[in-house]
Amino acid sequence: MANVLWSLLGILSGAFIAIQAPINAQLARGLGVPVAAAAISFLAGAVVLSLITFFTTRTQGLEIDWRAPAPWMFLAGGALGAVYVTSSVFLTPRIGAAALMAFLVAGQLLAGMMVDRVGFLGVAVREISMGRIVGAVLLLVGALMIRLY
Image 1 (cartoon, rainbow, N blue to C red):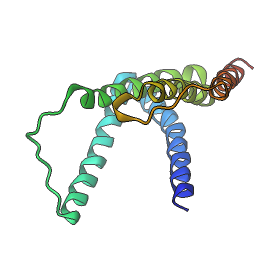
Image 2 (cartoon, rainbow, N blue to C red; image 1 turned 90 degrees about the vertical axis):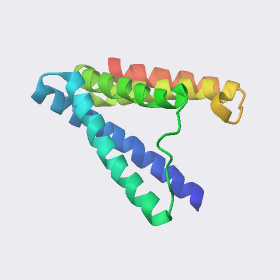
Image 3 (spheres, helix red, strand yellow; image 1 turned 180 degrees about the horizontal axis):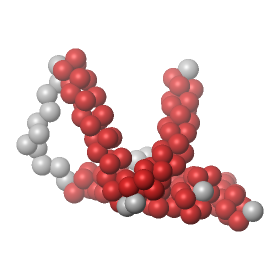
Image 4 (cartoon, rainbow, N blue to C red; image 1 turned 45 degrees about the horizontal axis):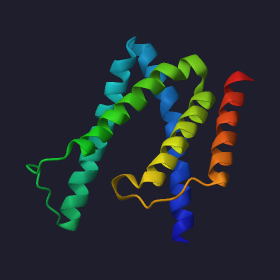
C-alpha cells in the first residue's frame, strides 16, 4: 500500500511541475524578466519550506545546527533547481508546456540512469540494461514527436 501512495505522490509532484511552468511563464510575462520570475518562484518556495521546517522541527522536538557547514554538493541542489525553474520560465512560452514536460522527463530519465549506473551519492547501483536503453529511446522519440508534430 505504501508503494502505491509513494507512486501517487510522484505523479502528483509531476503534475505540479507541469502546472508550475505556465504559472511562472505568466509571471515572467507580467514582470518582463524571466529570471525575476524564477527568483520570485524560489522565494515563495523558500518561505513555504521555511515554515514547514519551523513547524515540523518544533512539533517533533528536533533542533537544526544552522552553523554546521554544508558541503558544496548539497548547496548545488538549489543551483540546479534555479537553472530548472529559469529554463522552464524561458521555454514554456516558446515550445509549450507539453513539449517542455516531455523533454524534462527525458532529461530526468537519462540523468537518473547515469546516477543509478555509478551509484552517485550512495544511490543503489543499477546496470543500464537493454530494456532501460529501449525505454529511454522511446521516451526521447516521444518527446520529439510531442514537440515536432
